[in-house]
Image (cartoon, one colour):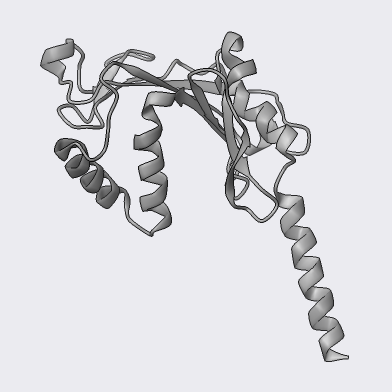
Length: 195
C-alpha cells in the first residue's frame, strides 16, 4: 500500500512538473516577442523541455538567437541577441549552472576575454529584452497584455570617453554605458514604460 502512495505521488509530481513548462510552440511565440518583426521567422530559439532542461527549440537561419522565458520565474522575460554574442552568453550559462556567483562569472569571463579564450564581438552587438509582470502574462496562451522593452548594445572595452555616453542615465530612456572598460561594457537603453 505504501509503495502505491509513493508511485502515485511520483506520477503526480511528474505531471505537475510537465504542466509548469509551456509547450515549445508557446515558448517560441513568446521568445520571438523580443525580436524585430522582420527577423522572427529565421531566429534560433532556446527554451525548456518537459524536464526543465535548456534545449534548442528551433534552429535558426539568420543572425538572431532568442531565449524563451524561464518557467521557474514569475512573469515573463524573453530576449534576443546577435549570434556573435553566443560565446559570451553560453559561457555565462555554463558558469551559472556550475553555481558561480554573478561576480565570479564576471571575473572569469573578464579574464578569459582578455586572454582571448572567450571571443567577444568586434562590433557593437544588440540584445533586446521583453518583459511583463505575472499579472500581465498568460503562460498557457502566451498572451501578454502589457510588456516593456529594454535594449543592451554590447561594445566590449568601450568607455565613457570613447563613446561620449554618461555612466548613469540622466533622463528617462537616455542611453548610458554600464561596465565601461570591461569585456561586458554595454549601452543601456530603457524606454519609459506606459502605466
